[in-house]
Image (cartoon, rainbow, N blue to C red; front, side, top):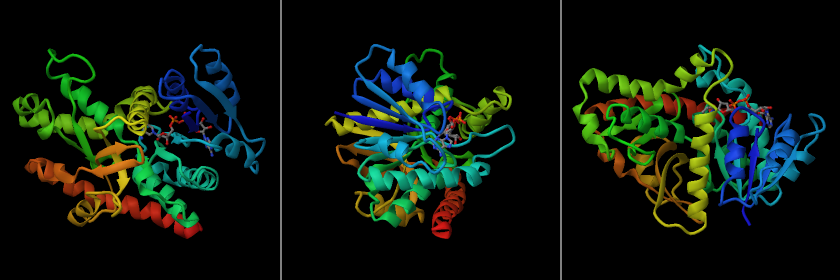
Length: 338
Ligand code: NAI
């Protein structure tokens, strides 16, 4: 029996993500929590004749903690797309003031009710919200670094898609696989085209085309925010990406070997490979290829850092610099309001 809970399930990401989870062969029970409309979304999805059992939970008022506790009871995986999205002109960091408090309170509820669940954080700014979850869990004495993941999969999906646009002969979602390391906002996003399975396509691009491609991956979210004209940020491509990561984790949990996904994780000494990456980069959290298994992160594959070309090394140094500040901001938020 695998139970997945979505916190923020009635939002732009939450709804299509919940739809994908309702169709998933890896899920038995789906629990939807939101401060509004969760019952409605759950009822709607429950009419789809897949075998996944769906329930919706909404608090009666802002002091009601029962609904979230019911939603989280016995859950194996929690996915968090709760919070506000960007409007035109906003960076992900601008969301901090609102989303930090939301994430901290949701992390507290998880720590109390489902401390052993895998937690997948989608809410931005991921570079800070993941440290907020970790610090909150630490304050409850329940932090397991192998089970906390910042979802950066959309950056990989974009890198794959945008690189593929340069060669029309490539078909299918699996034809290009680019790792994206660093963090999940602007210049902290570092696509590593030089080691991808389509590096030959990248190598043929002009210097300008390479620059444009990297910039498009780093700031691809802005294209969506602008095109939606103030009505939100990426939701459908994000739901696809969030589901892709969740499915990979569930496959690994169910025993599939060799599952590797890029994710933003805490570089704890208990994860093989993490200490080396930490001392090499000086950051406590980083997105990089992570091997997944039944207990979560099996190892981090820091070898990619030794394979970066000169330009990628330059971009990675910029990323690390900004990332450090984003991480400190998340850590300080929890310790300040404790
Ligand atoms: P949205 O506004 O459409 O949905 C957010 C949902 O969260 C709403 O239904 C709202 O009622 C709910 N919510 C707010 N406070 C809550 C609380 N305390 N408990 C439970 N639910 C709560 O926003 P959207 O577009 O779904 O984006 C959600 C988040 O995902 C944003 O922070 C956005 O920046 C982020 N995002 C992350 C991406 C990534 O690659 N990791 C990509 C795109 C967006």
